[in-house]
Length: 134
Image 1 (tube, one colour):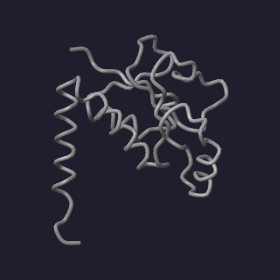
Image 2: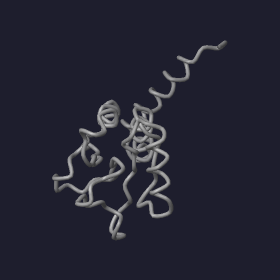
Image 3: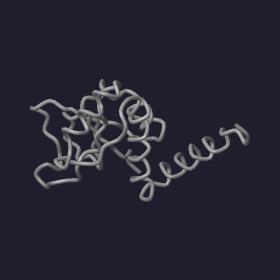
Image 4: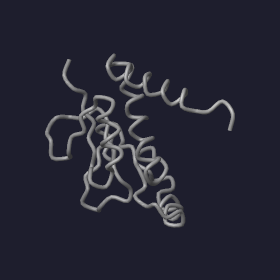
């Protein structure tokens, strides 16, 4: 079975996303790759010249991760995004990057047993790492 690909636009801005995708056996590809990806992840805000899939209705919209770690800046970005969002968006910073990758893996898991097994293993490790008493 070929590796499942996920396009990451500007991967240097989303290092935790790329690392988490690799943990689940997904191969993040750059926007210059000609292979059509199943999902696209993009930092928000993105440059005006960035061509996002889904804006023209041709493919699935990208998953957006705000690129600010400052809460005030993040709220400003989300207010600007409003109803014009070309796709779903996640929290800002490291947590948002990881959650976007987990969401991408969960979307692709039903069609790929290796991703499904890696995701189930990750979730069970997370569950057992939570203390019974705080």
